Image (cartoon, rainbow, N blue to C red; front, side, top):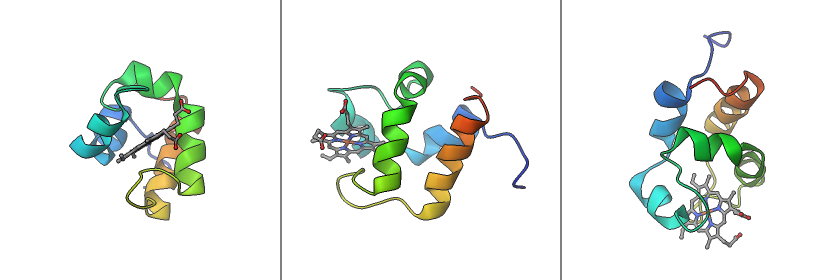
Length: 76
Ligand code: HEM
């Protein structure tokens, strides 16, 4: 449901594949709640612009989920 709180562990972390994580370790760890929280603004900007991941933009529903996670206070 659209009103259910979005959680990093349940909803967000599974969106980041091993390839994503391995490619981005130079900047942050996409499988780390702290790292993704600290970099949420720049991550959301890239996801919304469709310039990350490098192999193709996320479907809009996934970008929207990430946005709702940020707006919902980045629940663990
Ligand atoms: C959902 C997965 C991914 C997210 C959320 C993501 C996010 C980001 C963000 C936020 C930056 C800017 C970092 C900064 O300015 O500090 C970045 C840069 C970069 N990412 Fe990703 N990334 C993802 C997947 C990938 C993949 C699969 C590759 C493939 C090789 C990749 C390659 C790069 C490279 C080379 C840069 C540096 C050059 C640039 O800023 O465009 N990323 N990414």
